[in-house]
Length: 114
Image (cartoon, rainbow, N blue to C red; front, side):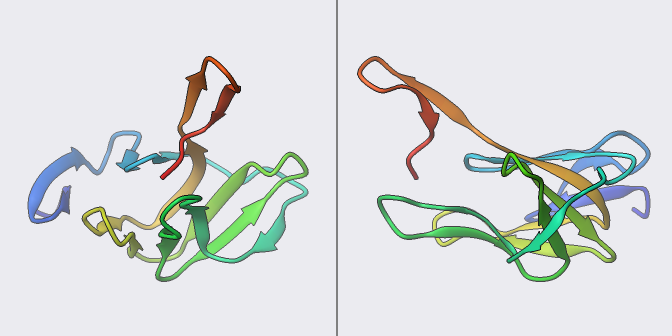
């Protein structure tokens, strides 16, 4: 249907609602507008420290702010790829990127090791 998006052929979220899309430890949250003062970066949103795998967009623009927070501006639907996760089609739009964190009793809060 035209008002739905699909992930691996399954209906996910109605297009009219705020989108939150997850692939492993990467979460994309739809935003209304891009923050000011961003700089361009490559389309890889996260690297796996252990496996060397990566979450990478096929198309679109990715930016980061001074605190290394990432944002995506997708002018058309694009695919988020990862070697161990199902590829996810991301609808066109603007997104903030959130990388999952975990608590390690020895190291404190850290980025999830992929």
